[in-house]
Amino acid sequence: MKKILQKGLLFYPTTLEVLNMKISYKNIPESELKPKYESEDDLGFGKIFTDRMFVMEYKNGVWENPVIRKYSPIDLDPSAIVLHYAQEIFEGQKAFSTPDGHINLFRPDRNAQRFNSSARRMMMPEIDPENYLFALKELIKLEKDWAPKSLGTSLYIRPTMIGTEPGLGVRPSTDYLFYVILSPSGPYFPEGFQCVKIFVSEFYIRAASGGTGNVKTGGNYAASLLVGSEAEQYGCSQVLWLDAIQKEYVEEVGASNIFFVFDDVIYTAPLSSGTILPGVTRDSTIQLAKDKGLNVEEEALSIKNVIKGIHNGKISEVFMSGTAASIAPVGSLYYQNKEHIINNFEIGDISRELYNQLTDIQYGRVEDPYDWIVKVI
Ligand SMILES: Cc1ncc(COP(=O)(O)O)c(C=O)c1O
Image (cartoon, rainbow, N blue to C red):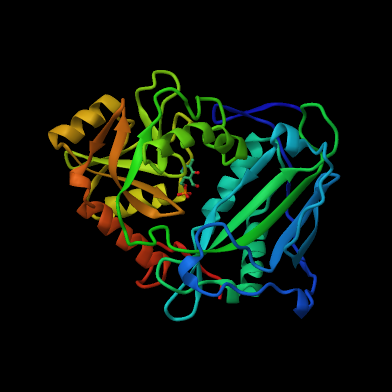
């Protein structure tokens, strides 16, 4: 396959099949429907899944057979490419129940775009963004009764693509499966909005420039498990990654981007190195902060400056951004065998305001001036 140079990055051309998609629907007998969860109070995250899933296959260079069918195991050959060489990508997004009975998606076009950019990097076929959105909406409409309604809950959406061709040997698969599953999820902060502790990884790294740091692919997360367990030993729920070369510049957290309020400027790592995930929440947070008149700089801070700033009070707040929590304030960083407490482990005003503003838009509690919301029902 011919390589092409696009915006300084090497890409392999892939086909973008616009399907004009007609989904077939497989009925599920009443007796096979799952019992609904009893209470919205202990949903947790990613533990239960709805009755149906969307599935579509890629064969002979085209996407075909889009179907919404019963949620059930996938038949895979034990030699399937994904199981050995991890040719896999996914997305994470949420549907939010609004007080007036609607269900909102938040910037789903951004997830569709990121899915396709992940697909290009992993040499997988793209999906027409309109079909991607259509699939999500149709599935959610059918599963609307599974969408929880209480404060902070959501219907988590996991679009996934895997290389299914059987046979060993490192190469791109010829066949793929795209599927979407839905998981009713509880609030990220079941005990209320509160600060989290983060472990700074000094030895292990997440991504180097030219690698797959800006791609949502399973291997990135598998490689983070070891340090994640180290973080837990210190009571930290997340890992903060430093740059791979100098182990000096702050990049992002396990499943979130990170912001530092330093002398009235809000810093977050730039996307240009290609080592962090371009978060949809990160982009939205930057926009909200700028529109509040705050100064935002996409510039990587050195961990030494961060620690110094925490101690001399120049850093007044640190917060993470991501689909899981929207905005999550950081109470301390565990670095070089010491816990460095930020703002007395208290939530800062900027974190709180951005959290309120963002979640108010997502849950339809206020008007959306940005056109970020797409209504499903
Ligand atoms: C590594 C990583 N960084 C950042 C994010 C935040 O991205 P988003 O705001 O799109 O959820 C995520 C979550 O998807 C992630 O896995």
